[in-house]
Image 1 (cartoon, rainbow, N blue to C red):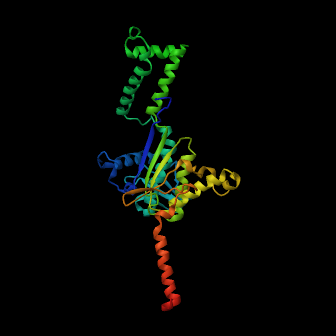
Image 2 (image 1 turned 135 degrees about the vertical axis):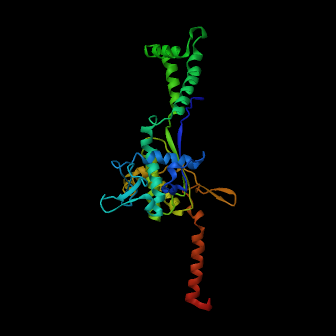
Image 3 (image 1 turned 90 degrees about the vertical axis):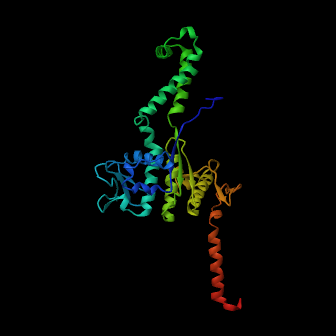
Length: 324
């Protein structure tokens, strides 16, 4: 804590472009080096177990449910028709689009919600030891530093005496304890998730890209936590979908009821909360329109202009021939 500002610990959830690697059967037994891919896989293994046979979850609006079946010998990630009857297959046997979007959706849902209920129950011994050392360090700073040395004995005994007196009506001790608890909580317990998602559009039709963007924004807006996200994308459909949600927020400030009929408020994006950058030839360019506060999606879709110009030229030849 510094100058009244409390640090908020974040969970960083990295979802790489290589996310379909979760379909490889030998992953569980492979020893990965300490890289971002290992972090992703460990997060995936934790997230998928929440969605067991009794907690199947729909994948966007694709008419498909996902669940993790620990009883399966190898292919434990399962998909079935939403009616539960038409078919059932393993994720490795599904389309490339599903292999890409399922890990993304499952991790998005788990780490925007249930993760915060499970946190603490799955802490490792090493993690617990680290927290204990931090606890003692903070007690020294926020509690014992206020108490004369001649009144301090064994630290564990002193801690117990201090806590007892704080709860028995010593207002000064209670104030120190409250400050200590606030700092300890902010340093050890994640308050929100930062999602870092590479190529969210990977192997998806444009309409599914739009639905995925809405799922992402809803998870961030509707969870009770201040989640955030970073996307790396080449898709103008992703940017155009984000623009619609920004515009919905802007128009909704004056015509909320009408806008909600088109796009529910859980999808709205405050333009003040976003930034959009394009990297070209080693130069970073801001592609948010300063006046409209919209993302200039056409910046990454210049090929459409080129294609249209070529088509127009070919049409001129087809219609007018050599006359023009």
